[in-house]
Length: 180
Image (cartoon, rainbow, N blue to C red; front, side):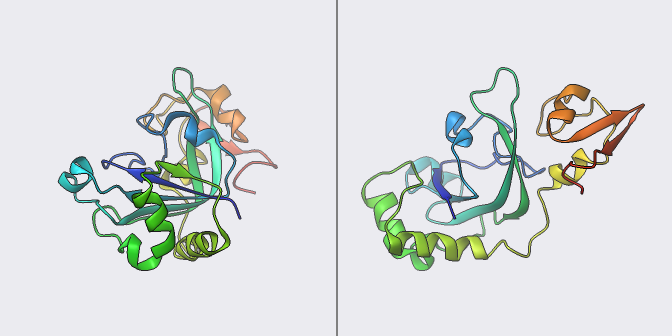
C-alpha cells in the first residue's frame, strides 16, 4: 500500500466535506500516486498555535481525484475518511520511527519508507478502514448539478469526470460511477 504521510501547520484542509485540497494546501503533492493519506501536525509554532502539533489529524483511504481549474493539484475525496482534528492520537506514540524521520529530518511529506516506517504508516491507516466515505464523496452522488463540492463550483462536466452524470437537476451515478 502506498501511503502518503505529510505534515500540516493548520486546520481547514481537508474541509468538512473531507476534501483534501479544498484550499489548495499541499498543491501538487495531492497529485502523487497513493492509496492512503495520513495528515499529521507539525511541531513548529503555527502547528502548536492551531492545536495539532505532534498529532495524527486525519486519515483517508481510497482517493478519488478531481482536477479543478486554477488549483495546483486535484481535490481529493476518500472511500474511507477519519478526521481527528485537534484531538488525534500522538504520532510519536503510534509511529516512533516514522515520527523520528518526519520531525528529526524536517521532512514535509513522504511516500518512500523503510519497512518499519511502512508498517507504522499502515497501522495508522488501519484506524480508518471501517470509516464512512468523505462526506463530499457521498454528496457527489446526490447533489444537484452545479452545487459546490470541495468548496468549488462543480459544473456538470466536472461531475461526469468522477463517473457521475447530471440529469435535469438531479445527479445520477453512471453504471461505472462511484456509487456502483
